[in-house]
Image (cartoon, rainbow, N blue to C red; front, side, top):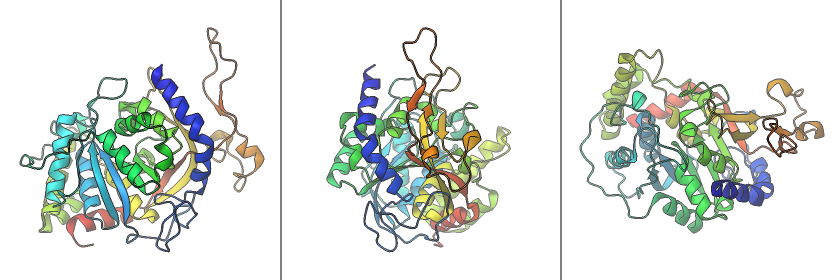
Length: 405
């Protein structure tokens, strides 16, 4: 009950004012591009339904990377640390793909491999807000890295907990920090719950998570949202401008033997580590009979932030199912120009379209509710990736990890 009150407070307090920011945000790095557009003003990158011609080389952007390494998380971290566009203020591991006792040292290993021990690594939540932890060792192996073994890290995490370091950094640089979240959203929700004004200070949030086309741990839910749907709902309702890079596009990013051979041929610690993880992950998938993958889910979220032309985005109102016995963790996307209620092209700004109500389930006989309407009008809170240029993505990912770009 206390969680519901906190979620509602954030939503009511920030939803209206943040809606303008959502509409004005122009994709991943809203308010800053190669032309130096001031924060909060529209740019040409990532417009809804369009691809941007802008590529890497922008920035630098202040970011915090919240992660649960994890095979694809590990490569995403290496990509981020090899990208001069990013000023990584902190890395905040959370329990997810494997328990925190593994995600934390895995993050520290990646920091050491990349030669970036200057980046603070802060331990995050050991469990979801209201649920027992479900892991994905079936996909990432018992150690989270597909069975690839690396020495124990010698670097130590900072003593400040993840949620607190997130809060401190965002408050230190209000309006400047983008949260790149590639694991369950427990750390972010904890920070928002501890500081109700924090959401208005976050520049944007780019997440790997969710899906409008079915899940990967249940038919309904994507793993990161499934693990902590209550945290995800807090984040989606916070008013932070969100870009959701979900299974709709990440399913088209399967790592191949050719990619791994390119990494193996490059003689640098990052490429060798990435190749080792990638090779083990491919073998792990084959041994278990998977037909595809491993998909580079998390690396795509980072790459899309670096180069907005990789993804095509579309405006949605996203909410999260938290009570369904079979559907908890499902992300629901409402849009007047998608699904059975879609309007003709060009009508998305018409009054009839924006007056589209956001409905929940019909009230039960035992309920005191009188209406299933959750929102009177359609106001988007998320830009959802709906298409991906996979070739451009892998050119960036493999190029950065191998050192050729």
